[in-house]
Length: 191
Image (cartoon, rainbow, N blue to C red; front, top):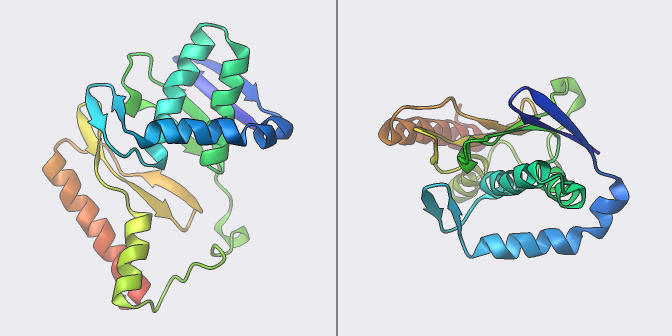
């Protein structure tokens, strides 16, 4: 699998063999256990990093590996990102040290080729089921540089998308609540 790492105007094509991904599962799990205890993301302590934040943390390690020309570590960090963010094509690495500014681009496929994920109901759920599912599909608000955003699972693309960068945390929370409510109602079949 290939992950493109973008640093300023340079693109590093990291080709991670499937065999490496298969053998590195224990290493990736160890990284997750380390992050389970919380992580300092730039100026902010995150007690429970979510999947996107974990990949941003590992992307920061990838930047360090690329700068030090440590191919093996770079391959492992790229492998972690590829294994945890299915469909990821590239990561734009922030050289200013702002971990939250590491951004990912996911592959886009035509919606007609992408069936609903197996085992995930999308309409007619009970209130509790809809609340739980919407909670899994809309992340909490997180700080990105001087702004805020949240992520949501986009069924049209089959991948995670970020909200636009929002100036204030209050406005971001409001927009996140709207996205959550919209998804909740959709899952209940009321829209």
